[in-house]
Length: 316
Image (cartoon, rainbow, N blue to C red; front, side):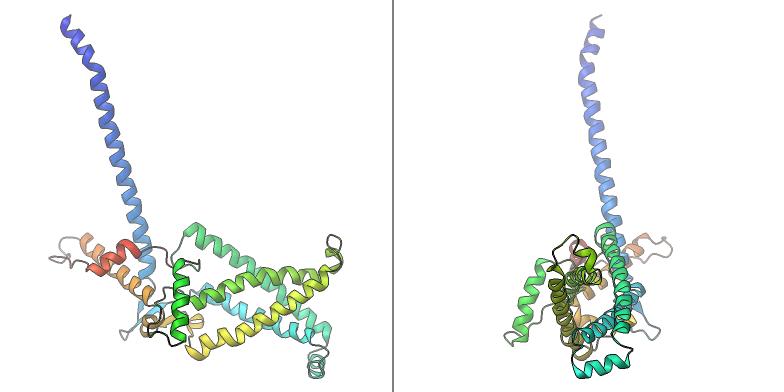
């Protein structure tokens, strides 16, 4: 009877010990699952980075800058923007004698409006498609190399200004996208909805004035015209200079960039890609069958380890 009582008295303590042990096991499993997920994310990112490097038959290494889809988007943008700018500016300055002659050769104002509206429809559809790409890339897939602004962009801008003014010999090191590319991209994102909204207001003035005062139409016309002039000047001066004249960068058409260009224009991304490639080589060497595994896999150097741990992830 006494023995049974002692056993019953120790039962709560044993239950508590078992619960504590189970809790520790659950926590250990949870930590292990988190580690596996983190490793899986790191491997996916490393594979995505390493896939940007291609080795040509002659041994030269090239780097993928833009996918076929991105290149097609840019080609459509060139066609639509060029058509909109050309036909729009001809309508804006229709009173000019030379513009009037050119308009007559092209079929008259009505023909210009038709081409302008057709290009506008394609431009709107492309903008909606790109909005879907943004949501998918930035917020769903969380892929590295986004255009999202970062604090480093401000420091890069200041450093670039000093470099261009001759105040320093050190050029800022850029990752996947430079500060110039980000400024151009965000200017496009800012100007696109403005041009679409004001363009639709001018296209359907009667319907718009049912909800807005009549002054909204001339205001939208002024905004549309000056934004178009600003965008055209930016493309012809800033964009054309930085891509065609200064750098002679054809990667948006070929999709590829040479190793020398990558080292000069995007050194941070270049080093991240090499670090990811080295990391994957190390993982493959460790997981290879014993008969094919090297006697002792070459360890990652300190720089690669730091890149793998800290920098394999979303880039700016």
